[in-house]
Length: 165
Image (cartoon, rainbow, N blue to C red; front, side):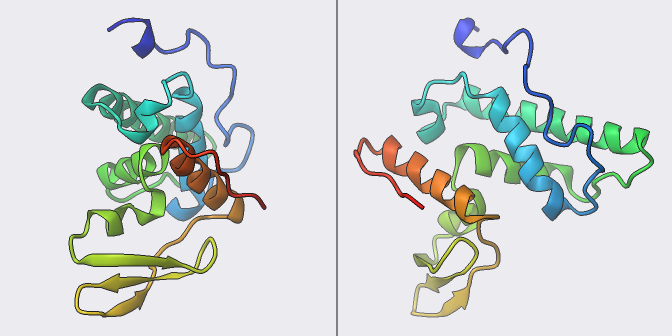
């Protein structure tokens, strides 16, 4: 691969959890893992965040797995609980946040979903085929995360608009 795919020789950003107590749940650790993974791929061209190639997807999956492994190693050194559960599912969640639809990804992949109604960063409803309406299972961690997500999607579409606080 060319320069485009090479990792920066030195990552000037320590992982977000460096020097902190390990999170006790996956929900607490996910934002940190997403941030650490995102920092490592900021050098990619913007189009790779809107229509990622197979190479970009593989790279982000690899980095997400590396971040998860590093997190668990640090937790082990500190005597804290390691993140357990399905590592592949957690890596997929990280990738969804970095390249895709974040917490909305499961709904975007579901062919039965007709509409998403968001009433804030953590509240909303899913409208399924046939009109069934159910609350979102998971939203964005914060208003800032939701704003950043929508701004990435808007800018990726070539529009000159942005969501402000």
